[in-house]
Length: 456
Image (tube, rainbow, N blue to C red):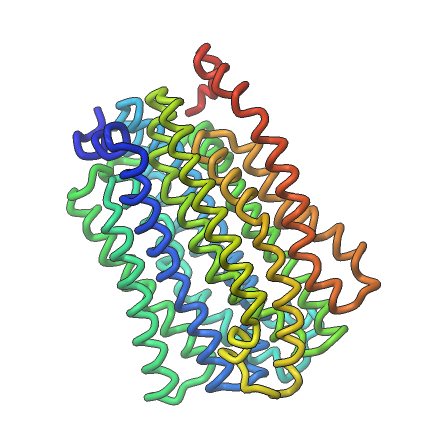
C-alpha cells in the first residue's frame, strides 16, 4: 500500500490546499532551475560578446535534445509509478523506478558521446561561419562530457514529487540554480574562462544537485526505493509511450529551432540568431511557471486517477487551467509593454542593430501567450492520466507540425514571418486542445466501466 503521508497528501488534502502545496512550489522550483539558463545567456552576451551569445543559441537546441531522451524516461516512468502507487502496487512502482534510473544513465552516455563526436559537423551543416563554430562546439562538448550525470536532474525532480517531497523538489531546484550561478561566475570572472567554462560551471551545479538528491534515494529515505530492476518489453513500451509527448515536444521543438536558425543565418545573420535567442530566453521564464504548475500536479492527478477519484481529478485540473491562464496572459502583456527591458538584459542599447530588431520581434511573439496555456495544460493533463496519444498529438503539433507548416506559409514575409510563427502556432494548438478536451467525459466513462490501459 502507498505510505500514509503520500495518501494523505494526494487523496485527503483538499484540492485547493493541494494546489498551493504542490503547484506553487513546483512552479517556483522549475523557474529557479531555469533561471541559470537565462543568467548564462546574459553573462555570455555581456562578458564574451554577441558572437559567443549567437554560438550559445546555435548549440542550445542540441543541448536540449541531449536532455530529451532522459527526460522522456523520467516523465514516462513517473506516470506509471504514480498510478501504481495509487493502486497500492508499491513493489511494481519501485521496479519501474529502478529500471528508469539505469536507462537514463545509459542514454546519457550514448547521446553525450554522439554529440561530442559530431558537434563540428552539425554546425557546419547548419551554415555557421568559422567565427561561430568554435563557440558552438566548445559549448556543446562541455555539456556532452557531463551528460551521464546531468541528465538525471529532471527525473530526480519528478521522483521527489511522487514521494510527496514537494519542498524537497523546490529546495533541489533552488540549490541547483545557486550552485550554477556561483560556478559560472567563478569561471567567467575569476578564471576569465571562455564559453566552454560557462557550460562547465552550469554542469557542475547540476551535478551537485543530482548527487545530493540521489544520496537520499540510495539510503532508502524515500517512498521509492531501489530494487533489482526488471526490464521487459512491456515496461519499456509503457515508459516510452507515457514519456513520448514530452520527448516529441522537446526534440521536434529543437528541430524547428535548428531550421529557424538556419533561416535566420540566411535572412539576418548572427544578429537575427541572437534575437531569436532572446525570444527563447524570455520563453524560458514563462514556460517554467506555466509548465511547472501543471507538471507539479501530475503525480497527484495520476495518483487519484489510479485510485478512481475522477471527481477529484476534475477539481484539481480546474485549478491548473485557471492558474495557467492567469500566468500566461500576464506574461504576454508584460512582454508586449516592456520588450526593451528584455532585450537590454542581453545586449547594450544600439549594439549591432540587435536592440531595435529585438523589440519589434518581442512585441509580435508576446501574442503567443494569450492562448499558450490551453495546449500546455491539456497536454500535461492527458499525460498524467496515461493518455499519451492525445498528449503526443498536442506536443508534436505545437512543437513541429504547425510551426513547420507556418514556416513555409509565412516565409514570404521575411523575418517578421519567423516572429509570427509562435503566436500563429499557439492559436492552432489551442483549437486542437479544445477539441481533445471534449473527449474527456468519454474517457472517464470508459474508466468507470473498467475499459482502461492494461499496461498501466
